[in-house]
Length: 307
View 1 (tube, helix red, strand yellow):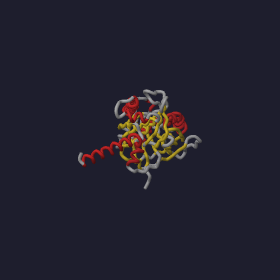
View 2 (view 1 turned 120 degrees about the vertical axis):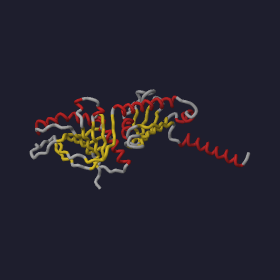
View 3 (view 1 turned 135 degrees about the horizontal axis):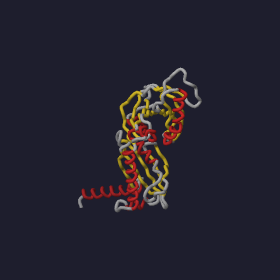
View 4 (view 1 turned 135 degrees about the vertical axis):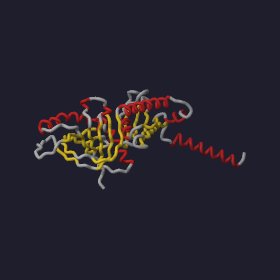
């Protein structure tokens, strides 16, 4: 055997040993799943956060969130009868409309067995993962294809609006229900007390706590400013001034208009744009009239910080 052949064999042996050390001891995951989603990272993140029941082999088992960084990563634990799996999700935007999703999975009881078997045969572990994530991706795609449309629009000035509103606070998912609870009374106040025409509603989110998914917001309607507006302990008045803003156009039920926020949040992050932290939603359709929800339009504005 020549000296060159010995060196080649030695190098291959070192590489093989290095691979074994990485595969069995250094690699943090037993299996990795990757796919692309036609949505912002925040939209995919929110759908994952809602995935509280593992489907398929353990349909009734609760999935818990161990740790998270909003819109970029999440660690979940799925508890089974004889083991638990940790799912390590990362969400990375490729552009305004595509997110790369990566999930590293580790079995907390049978990790070594999977690392021995998976490279050589198709295991029940691998089948269960594929089945569940295919179902998740199909459900995600159905939501994206049939429930919402979001696109980033040109920067604009937010409109000048004088509004009457009620101050509210809730979880993001409860905002539409909270708006509906107060919608009638604000409309009656405008019509019967102010004697003005009721126009399409608007909402101003004054604080968005992304960690706890809560918002503080003002729900109301544009009105004409006069010198004789009555004082109320329940309804308040505010002037919204024009501000340079980034904008998304959202089509879908107003319950899920926050997906327009996620698109803007990611757009601002990737383009190093500083925003003030508040959000304005302007609605163009009356949901009480019914119709195709994908034809309901909301303009979503994030005012920029002034230099």
